[in-house]
Length: 112
Image (cartoon, rainbow, N blue to C red; front, side, top):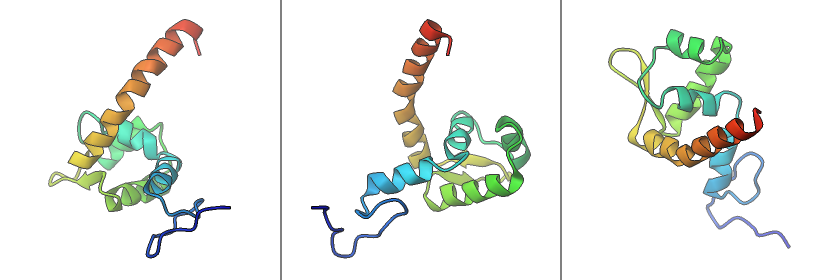
């Protein structure tokens, strides 16, 4: 029998559980979300520079993802108008680094 969400738990798209991991995976699984975070991992970027770094993603989709990532607390708009990672966003990107290293090893072995 499927577990019911805890009383007061927020439901998330694609999940009946409302579990935080499901909400996070849903957000990160949206088109361009991971790419935006990855491109911001070193330095803040303006909208134009971020769009160029994201292979000319649609401005509408890019802005929608930036809004979602800002609401989630991962991205912030700096004083100079560029987007950068928050401390929480930097923590999230750090969790990707072991996967990044694995992907580099995999690529060197398989050429994929």
